[in-house]
Length: 353
Ligand code: IPM
Ligand code: MG
Image (tube, rainbow, N blue to C red; front, side):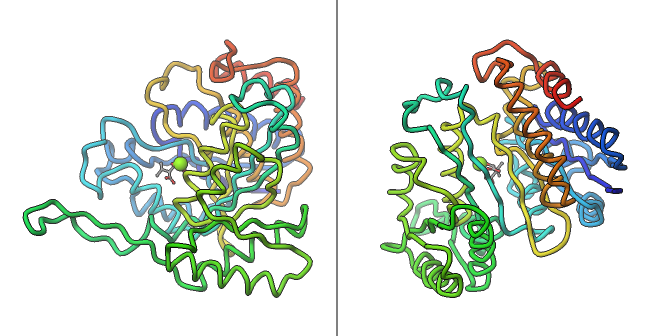
């Protein structure tokens, strides 16, 4: 097949990890007779520096016209004190919104040889295979913005957690579809004992559950969910939750896998290009050193092949090559090893060949 992929390396370690994922994709294209073309654009701080905007109209248009988008990471201390419109993160949020990718799939698995890389007891990690579905274009990240102001002599700031029923329904339906191809259970995570938006979330979840009787639903309060993620993670399968709850829970869940650097993600909407990115950030402290773990981004490119191009076999080959490299003892620094970014990708490439 032919596909046009937009690469958005972004900031910090982004260019390093995206560069390695590109090599993997090029290899897969050659091996299986596909034609992938790559179009590189700026986002985040890199785009602010060049164009004074964290996401230009041209870049967004290129992403919308692409078959899929692979992103590295955005952010860095250099832009930390910028006004909101000139923050790297604002570009990422505008991209997610602009592409309409409302569901962010974050699979969390634990390689058997990485059980000891996690601070969680190994016996609790066995069999962990979770997909967190994070709502991505609504919720607390996208409530009606208000400017910070003075009120009664005090500085005052507000963020709002808003949802329409249809926003909850579409991400819930996607979670149920996923679950019906897996172990047929969905954990819907909310804070319905306190938040009105969560009570709407739960109502819609129950409606979707009623229409999908073959999948069971469990409602879990977000505080309980965060505890169970470390005490009994293997009891979860598909977990679906609000934007910010999902952001927080997936950083927590990454601890199960041994390193943040391992986790990929796929952001999907209804039609249109998918957006693929590792869940980690730009890691300014190690940027440019060639030591970042590229596996989260490489695994994100596998998700791209699976979800955007329907190339299940090719996706599984990449995942198997990553597994085999880990099994052979290949480790970057975050996993206690000494392989560099390029070397780690070479180890994966060698197992794809
Ligand atoms: C993530 C990141 C982003 C988010 C930041 C960089 C805006 O933490 O993808 O999890 O909060 O969504
Ligand atoms: Mg995050």
